[in-house]
Image (cartoon, helix red, strand yellow):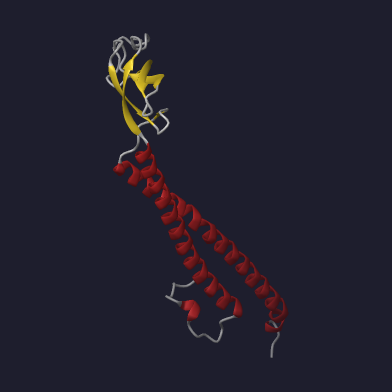
Length: 191
């Protein structure tokens, strides 16, 4: 059983303090500093990288006006009433930035007539891509991934420090057992 916790007890002067106690104190301090620094740096780096990548993606993608080549299929036959947000695949044609005609499959409202205008997103080469994320969505994604990366990175030194403290505790208990084996029998004698 351990007594009540005392603030900064590892650095207080004590004639009973062993070398293992001093080492453990410095290990705890080092591990906490390394955990905070490594986690913070990794989180900030990943968040900035993610934000930069998503901003580059937003700058690279352009909207283009496309027209359906044929009538879009009707909604799924399994349900009588389609949901308001349901989409089906249909063939569409658009003109790329270089002036060439392109075709591809896009998601549209079921039953859309041929020639219906739809907005598609293309990259610099005119290929179909998904719509870019908004700046708010990009900031949220960057923050979430940065926080996750920071926590995962900080977990590595924290776990290493925990394992080192367990090893130090085992050493300490082994040393106590050896001392007790040497001095214990002497206490049983009458002086």
